[in-house]
Amino acid sequence: MRGRHRMALTIDRFDASGLLGDARDSQIISGDDGLLLDAYSNTVIAAAERVSPAVVFIEVTHRGGPEGSRGPQGGSGTGFIFTPDGYILTNSHVVSGADTIHVTLIDGRRVSADLIGDDPDTDLAVIRIDALGLQSAPLGDSKVIRPGQIAVAIGNPYGFQTTVTAGVVSALGRSMRSRSGRLIDDIIQTDAALNPGNSGGPLINSRGEVIGVNTAVILPAQGICFAIAINTAKFVAAKLMIDGRIRRGWLGIAGQTTDLPRRIVRYYGLPNESGVVVASAEPGSPAEFAGVQQGDVIIEFGGHPIGSIDDLHRHLTDGPVGVSQPLVLLRRGEKIVRYLAPVESR
Image 1 (cartoon, rainbow, N blue to C red):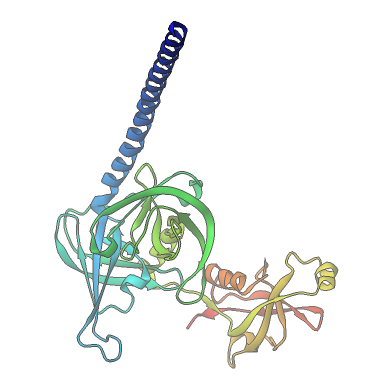
Image 2 (cartoon, rainbow, N blue to C red; image 1 turned 60 degrees about the vertical axis):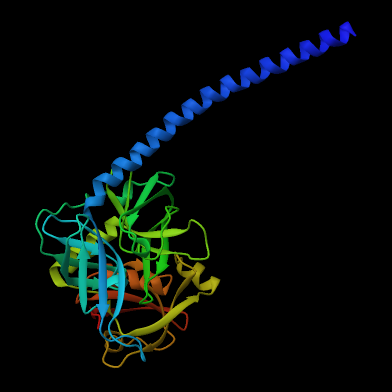
């Protein structure tokens, strides 16, 4: 009996010391975790505080609502001031076609806004307000961001103004379709939560610099959200502020991506195994004047390889308008060159 009691006592002491040891270790670990979490929290707080004064709530009305509806129809979204004189970046789908646009600032002021220009092909728009004491958001460089870094989204989901969510940059270089059907390149994927109403708001880095314009979510999914890279937004915004729209080239071709025979790819040493087959050339278009025919396959334009209809769209967006360029075609297996100058898209 005494032996049993001594053994039990020994075991109890061992268990107690073990538990105490675990408790000490957990206190040390939780303390370190607390420091890390505090540092993370302070980073998000500082970044949000730097940009939040520039984030605005946008309300729009459309007089011509859906058939059968009564009165003007409304909508809302987010934007952010990017110049001290009141220029605001947002999404095209937030303000496009609006009859009236009103902006609510962080200090509660509600002012009317004018549409400077919008570009449905990149889902970006610029509006402007006339108000004093505006704070603008600093713009970053989307080329230097990396997957895994902190990403903070600020917006007005469901009208809840200046809502902050945080996550990371999940991936870079994504592509997605705009509402016009064109491909938007250089999209940032993030898991910072976005909801309806976040559209047009800023995605910022840990320094409080805008790295993207929040634009879309995949509703059935969890944590898959997208933002237009700020470098794209800078380019589009500058063009909209000057011209009110983006000038893109137009060839007058209807076509689609098609695979090329492997023997043709090998024979000509082509960089792509696909091209754009011409379904038709519109009468009076640059393509018709250049002699482009139905069934021709476009493999190069302006010195750029063309492997898909999206490649062609990219070059027509980025390339010059009104300047003659070589168009390389495959016609019944023979490689031919035609010269044509894109005109401004209609």
